Length: 227
Length: 123
Image 1 (cartoon, helix red, strand yellow):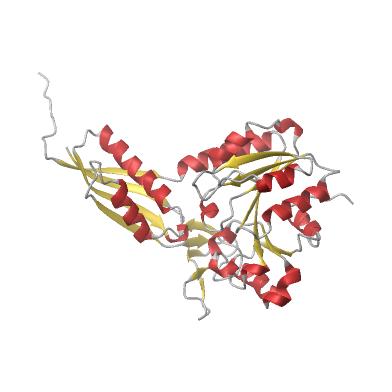
Image 2 (image 1 turned 90 degrees about the vertical axis):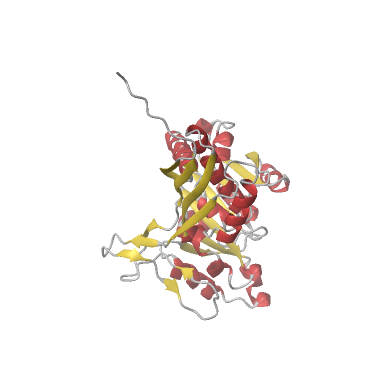
């Protein structure tokens, strides 16, 4: 004889889940990483506030490295194509990733963009993240390196106000150094702020309008510039 | 800043599980959110209330357990809380990711979580 046990209406149950809400993104980030590795593509995730100089940095890196590396750029943005057009004008393939109302790129969007590109014909991929220093920290994309760009025109507290983004940053670029005087910003203090938060993060000072310091950014990323 | 999208994820996971369990009502939800996620907990609560409004999780109690940042050092074996910058000009605590004991870079072992721990349902 079989017995059937049922729950009664009104019975209360506790259900243990332990569900990691970041897992879905992390799994896709790992997949992206494998794809990139398989094709020998080095991917650099460039983060920074709106106006800090992310696009300018990528422009300068593209100009510096053009003779030696085959490059592609992804640009995450809410709606405009302004930045991706700047990079496309340098003659490299760009993929615009529309993030809609989201404040960060995620691994899924990057995966979709990767599918649009012939990875066998690429050495170097620059991914320009959305202009914000808070949310991208929580969403890995599967890139090899993460760069954070802060500019002198954002004032002296940008680093200490956004500590978490430096936890995973390989390079911190402190840009617009030519304006440190008028802004009364102490460049060395900004650099020290980064080191106090994360000793592993290399600090490079740049002027991305003139290209000053960009060679050092490439070296810090492990990308050897042409002689 | 992405409290709404994270909370949407929480609510979706809650409702999916509740449906799987043939629940009539969701009474309570417990999540663990790491301090290093910098998610605004009040905003998460507010978003939760709005997102559960016309669902079986309406009026359910959301318990958020905070997880403090911790790191481990490959150099000296330190395994413990992070250290924070102590300058009086900061009105927030600034976490650092260097070992408080030897100064080498730490691996973060806790504080970045966003985990759905458990739900309490009524059938």
